[in-house]
Image (cartoon, rainbow, N blue to C red; front, side):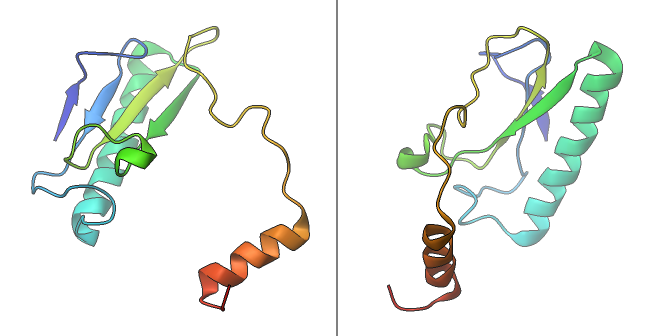
Length: 113
């Protein structure tokens, strides 16, 4: 399901949710997750074609530490326009050293930390 948010970051900001309840990415059924992704792509195309946005940002948060505030899985599809006020969360972050990336990759693969 898709609907416009009542607190839009930009004109056309929409939410895509699964019809079946899932708390977030950790809980959603794989088929429902796929359906949400396909719907988000369709909405993004509509935003581009009908609003003429210059790009689109997808935003999906999980658990309070990840900034989730509504506990039903959802994806924000935010049309982006030159000069809009949406902040880039990854701007000015330091680059990780290759040795640190390898250590993290080993943990993700299941190696001892």
